[in-house]
Image (cartoon, rainbow, N blue to C red; front, side, top):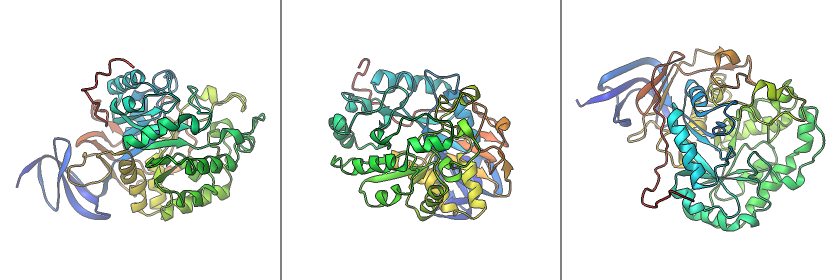
Length: 433
């Protein structure tokens, strides 16, 4: 029997079901899935669950430009402890990632700091060079239909029609922040209810309808952080559309006692919206679950509500919260694996997300009996707070990145090994923009 570099034994999620198996790894990839294997290093987890590691397809690591809130080092450490081995970072950093030079700068920073693999979105703005950004390593493109850091909001879809056609030609996905800025109310805010009033459900549904009417052939559109119940039937009727939901829109609503710490865009909505999203997740209407990890400091969040920035942290609690829902029988394990592993890999073209041959050996080991209370002082984000304080979660016992053990029993045991998931085209001479 051929000896593997690494063998991971346990109750493995393979081909949609759990079975006692051995995962054999050579050169960072899965090369065998059998009942018995021999390896240079063998990790035997008995009857613990061996699952694909999570992919968080929506994070803001604040690097560069706002590293007092987070950076690729602290953010990836947080990801690792939550079972996430691949993060996809959004372009509204400072400077915004809308040029090849900015994309290269961010990639260099991430490569020097990140403990986990990463991909970088490029922002869509009028006149941006989509072909160059694609060949420069963009994992996908991001369109902001509402205001955001870095002045990335587009005035209309028509203003970037040529750019959207170029995205369609690239074959990469277009992730969209779908809020119609024209329907947003600019009133003063002092509560989560006020924030919802200013960004009503119609902001989201109007934006989704506009996307459906854009008429750009072949464009693969991914709707980020779906939050309104009225959006769900629209998503079912549109071709080439995938969708995302966050834990905060599933588990929190405008009645949560969070004040400025619950301020986020799109806003926490009513309980009926949250329940509709939950049902859609169970039924498979929503494709993926992502954290929209957007940390701000405690001091910033404690400002008067009107001035507190929008966004909450969540990369470390994404998988633990969803695994708790599995344990409590609210969603099946297969839906968890699909939402945080398989479908993100499918949508963004990642060689991860499944325990199958030739995939990256990104793996998390879970004891479903070990549910713990989430506490901010046990988490690893630089912002040092969580909206999920004292909720229950199931954190992984071990995490492997390309077959290398990186975290075990809550302790980082592997050195920095993160790398970019998209190869750059080296033949195009992209020294300048």
